[in-house]
Image (cartoon, rainbow, N blue to C red; front, side):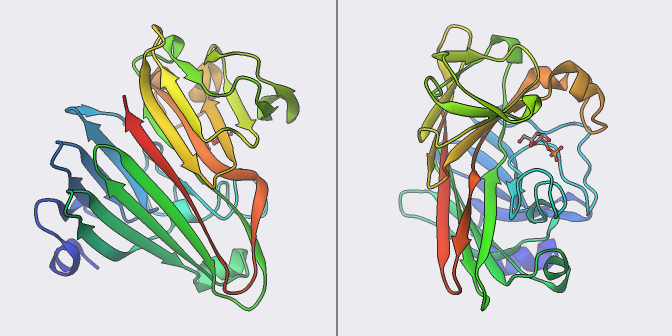
Length: 294
Ligand code: TA6
């Protein structure tokens, strides 16, 4: 569907309308009565912008590639059905697939809802021989609620990983802290997956960080250097959190990041990584995150 067709079929007026993010990339613009605004690209089903209180709250690289087949650096990439490297392309194919609109609505209380869909295709089945149906609910109120429903529509069992790879915009990574992981076991991807327990109450980020917090509590927060909360993340039926910042050297190797971009974002990612989700034919699984600006 082109933008005109999308608006004809799905626009709810000022609260939700479609536009061309680029000439080739259609996106939804969602507006809440609180003044919060959201942009969601149909490519990848990816939240690209979240404005609260007149300020952008997500990081989107100025050098992000809006090219089909490539992942867009920033916002909230959808990681499915694989996390990281493996038999599929890194982080799976969802983030480089074209989603379609399943539903749009504006609730009486003013929440603006967009549900996007992705189903298996000859292209996905070639790399992942399963039938599936994804529904991604993106709900904008004073918070941002995202819910991922995965259904096994095939005749054989399947297993998947899923994760919402949120790039939170921060003033300076050297001044933020992460709260919620004290006493939680984590696997350090930069140290061969070595597992240890985080013994910090409010964890600073002082170097390249790439850690999987296993069976993590459902609440985590990003704080400023005065330990005042910037963001709160509440996850449900996502077992883990991933914490990532590439820092200086890794950033320098990433063509879609500018050298100092590492200072401007922290990825705090709710996901099912350590334990894959298994679905028998006809079964489905729903997981969600709620992001709040504090
Ligand atoms: O979520 C952390 C991570 O797996 C890091 O290892 C890093 O690769 C990051 O995701 C970004 O991955 P991408 O494929 O988008 O460059």
